[in-house]
Image 1 (cartoon, rainbow, N blue to C red):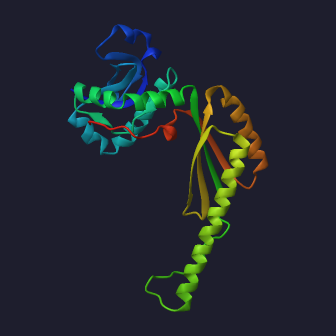
Image 2 (cartoon, helix red, strand yellow; image 1 turned 120 degrees about the vertical axis):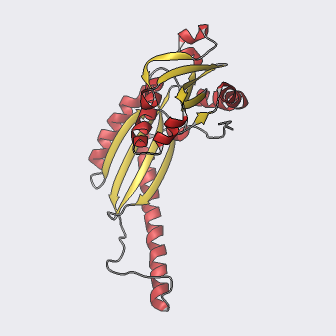
Image 3 (tube, rainbow, N blue to C red; image 1 turned 135 degrees about the vertical axis):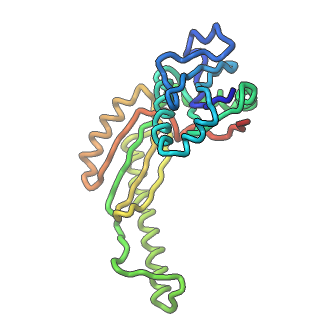
Length: 249
């Protein structure tokens, strides 16, 4: 039987699993396409899975796949309420019991180190939208084939704008770090079609400090009135799981 994998959790977070050597149904948690989820015991860990058939793989490539991705995240969130979790990427499958056990066994030390590092931690997510300080010149389109000083001037201007954007993003990142003092952070920045810059910020925090973090966010929105900010979380630590495992999927 093939398995679809959602996440790895701590086995001792599910006391009933201590009496089981075979997969045990996880009550009250529905997986992809309404499938029953199971706790698959593997040494000190438990892998949250559901049965996977070829028809499910085909459905994931259709518009149903978007709903399936939300179901995937919902299962992980349910488990996160009970245990430290190491999320699998959407679409991770194992061909049978042995393949799943081999993967856990070969990555046991890596998984346990991740669990220890992330125990009691959560991810907070901020989206920060700001005006581009150096918008593109309106109505000017250049092609690589263009020749002469005009094209070279455009290249220099573009490089200069990019450096200014990077400096602005770096300054905002430092400002947010000083405000929130996260345990770790992952930040990406991109220019939107609307002409604005979007900073996507993931902060790793202690679960016990989530309320304090939310209070800091309220203060930040008052101080940074030129920015449009959105906060979500606490989430499982998606951005902070070290992806070094070798799978046998």
